[in-house]
Image 1: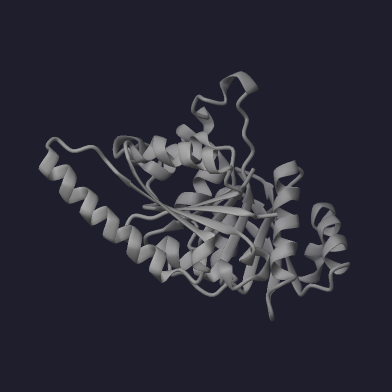
Image 2 (image 1 turned 135 degrees about the horizontal axis):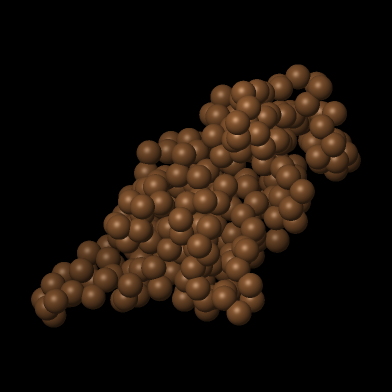
Length: 280
């Protein structure tokens, strides 16, 4: 259940639009919302004062634009390094979901340009909803879940079912990509896709909820195939499991797979043409 949402705003209004789309769904309507804007330290008191004034306006405009009851909103203007502050506030608030904007930078560029979303993505163990600058935020109707045998994928399926079950006219797209790096890319959008064991297991759960659904089985490189399917089927929200492979003693360190761009979730967050919800 999503009870606490952290929205990190930067003045681009994408995260606010995304939250408003979610709030239309009853599943999210009981949640309290923390709206966070972070001011980086400045060289002079005058510059800092100007930044604080501008940041206050960004925060106020963000709060005003939300379709959330005022008593459920907690606005926070913080000073410091945004990368650290977002993680810190998420932990303080015990957030169930972090919503952030993303420039969709690739692995090396993200590191060189000190990407906030990439850093938070590496370190947090909380679900993240990333909205790229070039993505058009739409009303949520078609929700795609990427399936595999991981627990995170099962959590993604449960979340997808809960969402679509409360969306009038909503559809759940169940997709599974069989990894085949060297072979020819294929997609199966027919009823035969439902025979794939991993998809069949998901369908059994979906049928119990009387949810409208569609199945897609594919073979190829998982990252590109997932992005291709989501674009071809006009997906409004892509839900993807993102396992944390760090041992317990290394939870405060970066995930090297994510840092180096070797993880599936890292690829999808960069190249998907719709908002991506990464589930732990």
